[in-house]
Length: 181
Image 1 (cartoon, rainbow, N blue to C red):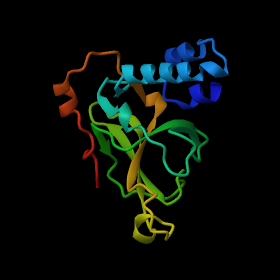
Image 2 (image 1 turned 135 degrees about the horizontal axis):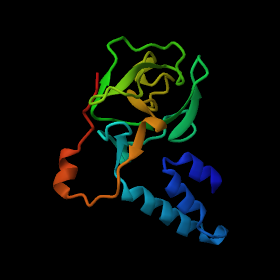
Image 3 (image 1 turned 60 degrees about the horizontal axis):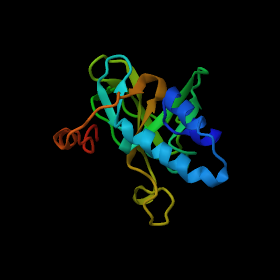
Image 4 (image 1 turned 120 degrees about the horizontal axis):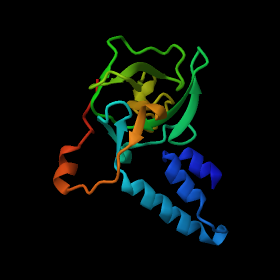
């Protein structure tokens, strides 16, 4: 259970709530239901500095070859970045440089720095697939690799407070075509 709690994108309070569920192996279903309930309460990730909506939690994804939806990565300067991966984000601006493969954490993915559109705080990186046969890189014909994804620093975002969303709000929150290049 500890591994599960430490690898899910949960706040400290939500992790504590989940870990405090007293259960044995037979109650694993109950714990899974608690996880789902906790995750469904908060639908968006916000910039920690200015509360700008950055991503929908439903867009969190596991990148092929990575160990889950978040991980700890070290840059060449020794800084550790706990990073959550998303299929799409919103309200970010990308650094005006070409993506680079230098010191990438994901083989065959070049990166460029992403900032909050409102406060210009560093949020993370956009990773773009480069090379490979038909975009999949393994020659098998299967589409395993993503064209692009975003790695967002866990410390740069926070979960949205519990809200009562309406259907109209959800319709305007489609992030799927944001920040593609």
